[in-house]
Length: 396
Picture 1 (cartoon, one colour):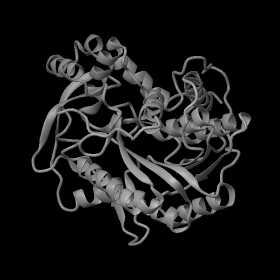
Picture 2 (cartoon, helix red, strand yellow; picture 1 turned 180 degrees about the vertical axis):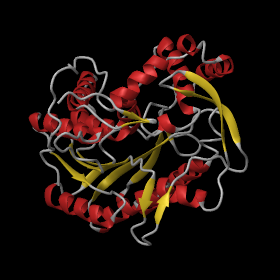
Picture 3 (tube, rainbow, N blue to C red; picture 1 turned 180 degrees about the horizontal axis):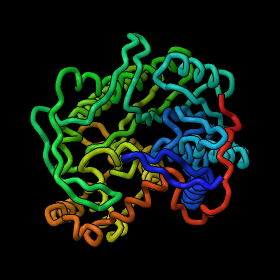
Picture 4 (cartoon, rainbow, N blue to C red; picture 1 turned 90 degrees about the vertical axis):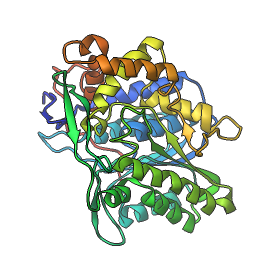
């Protein structure tokens, strides 16, 4: 079938298998071009099918020749209906990994659930024995608590007062003002329950209880801080409370792993175009301005460049992992450079609909967005028939 992007609000409801495959191949080639990484050899990636999680799996496999198990929750294809992009990404990754002689298996299901945890533990026990590195990169808006049975929904809201600022519709390029009402009721608690560190801790506890963590095992979860421009709705809002909880969990996990000399870290990463960030008011405008500046400075990075640098320059240098005063790895250092943020702040004041196409990199934002779904990828013939029914060889 001929597959084209279909939009519903800020979400693309179709994805292209060949485009997703090419995206994965491009990331693999980038990692190969950067040389070997003296990293972990047995890796579990929780949230492995898109974004930073997918980049982590690729970097582990093709940078360190690691055996990888990926856990994700993606929609499989059916005749006449495309899969979610993460499904196609994972199929392409497994195919390339197996061609390279690397172990790679995947589990598709709700990573918050006890059932998927049990299935993953059994697979590790049967195939790998113990894990050296656990990447936690879940990005779900809802969580069914495995103990209480309560369905928690996260919200993106400021705390205490209404937030008003600029935003942009990245499809039309229209800059407008938006107001977001403050959170109320159980919004904070629900957001922390979904996006905080409780589930990360549950995974590590489960792995340790069954002796599936190797001595010196490392676990990393991903977070974001961002600039003062976005802090009211992000870092000082409901999501910020969840990120605070995630960071506190890293210390608790490190304490719990003291007997095996294990460590837990939160890596603060750069702002990038994701399905989630595209729906967050203010963020698309900020990213379009940021991209313009970072590309001009020659310091722009996507997911794969970020994670390669995290592994090569932070996690696996042979020395102690460098962290900030709050114990976090800062791989957002280029984004948060003072000169970069000063330029963004100046452009923010000046940005309006009429000048944004020149002042910002809205076209780059759009391209990255469509790339997430396998569209607008160089080297792919979108006029050709594509087989939407793609299987994942080692899905469990």
